[in-house]
Image (cartoon, rainbow, N blue to C red; front, side, top):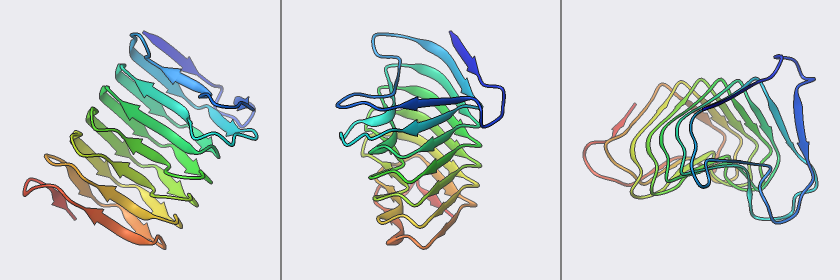
Length: 178
């Protein structure tokens, strides 16, 4: 496993100016039990359609206390199980703050802020299972605050305001929205 913990101040910053690539890739080709904590990810002049952080093929990942600012998509999660994002801010993304791709399972988003994005705050694709979105502030995004196309999941106790739509949900009867 990998653990990367910043010192908890704004001085722990990972800056990136790149073209046609990700700032951080977690997993690709293997990697489990990964923790990123108290770090700041800032887009440089990224004009590509790549996410700042791409979790692909990693299991048991914890992202805690991050600030993800700018980029096309803040984070894309694919082919990953048991990923938790908590106490994290996604600000000023050009598109979605978070994209949970159709092969992600057991995804948890807690106590985080998704704001001022050019698309949805969080977009959950068909085929993602057991997605839990609790106690977040999702506001001022150009798309839906939550665009949800999954099942077997829970959305509750979120503040979702000043988005194009608060919630765009499709799935089946096992959804709990409150």
